Length: 336
Image (tube, rainbow, N blue to C red; front, top):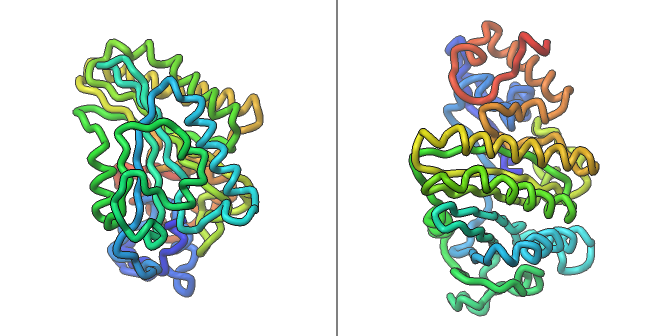
């Protein structure tokens, strides 16, 4: 996890004092800032572990039509199963897990999958050329490689350029909504998510310029426990999780209720299905959480209590609970 690689923070506290939070100084604050949001102070500086960056990394992004959805989702799931199998070559620390999204485009009335992949060791990519068919050997062995693809990009580029490339694929409009949930990696549940998403589309098909999108990203236990401690509540996870995030765009305020309602109902139905089938998980990725969600509750009771205690220690008057707008608060009055 990226937050596990923060060596130290410089923090301006509510009383104006400036402190260092690290493993050796104010260690409770240091841990709390790794997932605790803006509940403790203003971070004015941080120091991260670094590593030599390659000149280029390989990135691959492709689209595949909605009628191949079952194949795409199955390939996504099987990729995670291969990485967890323990067999030689099935897990590669240079490879990301695929990010697979499904988009419903109201103006066209169609669904499309997009998939994004990364490999950080470009020296294995046939002498660094930019042949669109030139996938790294690791990704060639992935079930995703057999999918029929269009709008396919496959190239070695700098990290900066790869971010710009991915950003160019994003659609922005005047209105947007987010929401998230997490499930255990399970094929039946992933297919149910797709069906629940599809069931929601008739309620927003009248909305012009709408991109109704959900994104799936697998988190492997091989990553979770690397680095220093945090408060996310994932330290005991021994199986892959799938973060499901909604990122929806549309054009006019008159459609706000229809779209945001569809997002909320869809997430609720996904969580109901997962709970009924034993594939639910409490973690909520705060970067994509909606205003009606409370991702800090998903960290677990002990971690939430820890965050509340740290907040009261460093901000006894509660300035960052009541005077700092935005973010997810600790509900200290309700839970302490």
